[in-house]
Image 1 (cartoon, rainbow, N blue to C red):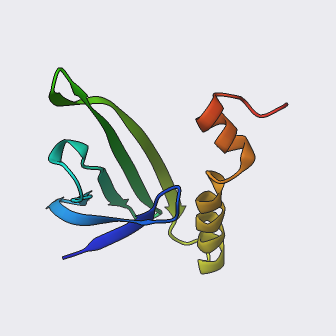
Image 2 (image 1 turned 60 degrees about the horizontal axis):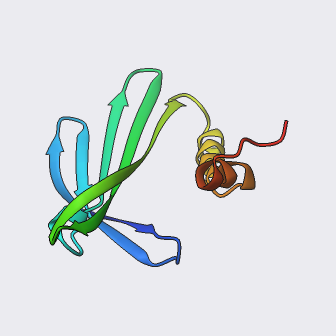
Length: 121
């Protein structure tokens, strides 16, 4: 079974196990904890002669107990859409991936996500 491991804010492993495949799409669930609290990762790939388009979506629910019943109070969602030109060099594709991977760790993006503050212009 295919597993993708992401890291949480404490650098702890968060494993996502493949639960379904449909066409060019795959769904991975984090199967730790209660069913209501399952995190989900969805990946898809659209290939053409000129580009490979990868879409990823991560859904993270928050569960609370209301009147003695566990309920999902909200779900945070992060998604991305990456299009790579198929005839780009391996180095160019690797640079794009490396820059995109480091994007969310930049102070500008962290402030936007955590505090709703735009970067100084």
